[in-house]
Image (cartoon, rainbow, N blue to C red):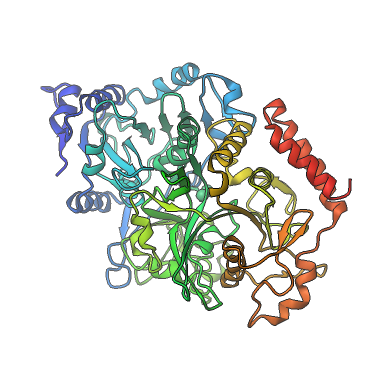
Amino acid sequence: MGSTSTLDDTVSIADLVADGAITSNAEVVEWVTGVAELTKPDAVVWCDGSQEEWNRITGEMVAAGTLIPLNKDLRPGSFLARSHPGDVARVEDRTFICSENESDAGPTNNWRAPADMKAELMPLFDGSMRGRTMYVVPFSMGPVGGAITQLGIEITDSPYAVLNMRIMTRMGQAALDGITPGSEWVRTVHSVGAPLLDGAEDVAWPCNDLKYITHFPETLEVWSYGSGYGGNALLSKKCFALRIASVMGRKEGWLAEHMLLLKLTNTDSGKTYHLSAAFPSACGKTNLAMLQPTIPGWKVETIGDDIAWLRPGPDGRLYAINPEAGFFGVAPGTGESTNPVAMETLWGNTIFTNVALTDDGDVWWEGKTDEVPDHLIDWQGDDWTPDAGRVAAHPNSRFTVPIQQTPTLADDWYEQNGVPLDAILFGGRRATNVPLVAQSLSWQHGVFVGATISSEKTAAQEGTVGELRRDPFAMLPFCGYNMADYWGHWLEMGEQLGEHAPKIFQVNWFRKGADGRFLWPGFGDNSRVIDWVIRRVSGEVEGRVSQVGVLPAQGELNLDGIEEVESDLAELFAIDPASWLAECDLTEEFFSRFGDRVPAGLRTELADLRKRLGA
Ligand code: PEP
Ligand code: NA
Ligand code: MN
């Protein structure tokens, strides 16, 4: 079991760290000691990931008022946390990529020179854990020892972060034991930035108005200050598994992607396929990860809903893992009718953050049930009734739940070396132009499609609703280096994979007719699109070539049971050269932001697309 050491006058901080250490790796102990000497906690806990540790920490947090235990009969092993009202989401404007050269961060990231950022941060971290416990949280992204796996340690003064990390990663002793002297691992440090001086009383959700989410890709470090929330504090997720890992992948020949991962089994032949998909937020990634097909012939199973790491295997194919071990999902809009699999997954052992509390000690959020409870305690802890004129759950309220509770979880999630990928989907929310599905004409064309993903802004984003926002590969806030170099890395990967490369498709569930109505039913019926995608991969259907890619030929898309869509097919697949050419102009403008770092292959694709459109 992990152990706690507490500071008193007779021990040095170095002794405090060493006394509790559950590793003999001197490099690790030395790093932890350095961070402890800087942040000056009262106590140090090395986390082993055990159930006893979980029980102890949840007990302490309930006593402190940070966690509210839910009704054991309705939601066993589960808790509600309410954040500070100003600490409810990722903070992209306070997120920095600190590469030595500004051009390596690229025009889509905030950049600071590493030395300047460290000089700004260190005074903030100096004594930032005073009066608190410092937790040392070792974690593995992927199965320990796996071919695509990476290891890291998060030092944090937030027990909320510790619990969430235990759900979201393979956290504890095995991960720590995997960090052998001289091996590569990622060092992450997190402080809520709220030292408790002179025995001051703590609050339920300590944080600081000043926030920094900083990444040092060249030294594989993350330093996060001031926030206790999700992607700001669970440093394995966006910080490591996307921003730092994307840089590691470029150097080492692999890819860190903002993608869900699915396993598909043809129930007639027994053949299995694997598919990944990148969509910007609010485009249904978690729903697709938990797809319930409406057509017979396919078993669809979940491997991941947010992040995939892809690496060429010994047979030359591209292998994928979900490096995470849990879901950190948005609660509102998740319900029996929209995502029954998610609802079943949340039966217990779940940490809910910023949802509403029911009178019988369960949770509720907008969209959970059609019927709205008469009375709730809202996400800020206030009484709420349906006439309150405000939402009961924060729009970005979350559940953190172990992936192993997913009823549709594929065995492949456990695969030590990942699963071979057959197809990659890129999507966005587009009322016009983009057809329901189109296969790219080549890997290079597929990279062009990924690089030019755009999605209409929703009410959740700044700007005019409906305006297009570019979100290349759905990685805009998550790429740890120059986005144009990232496109180049994808092109090189295609060259390496050659004939083994997965096939790339563009999809759009959101196209509307001239009358403003959605032309495609979406949700479970998206299985019809995936059915066509896999039949293209296996060579069972021919498709028909259009200017923007290969579309389903007449009769290839299975519409059994939704024959009414037949009359909308022409509109669903219509390609208007004039508006596509206008979009090409926007793409050229977008590319110009990256100057001469845009790979020649993508400029060729833009020129070729214009030619096919008759320019
Ligand atoms: C987050 O907001 O903390 C987070 C993990 O982001 P996302 O929902 O985009 O995955
Ligand atoms: Na968010
Ligand atoms: Mn995400």
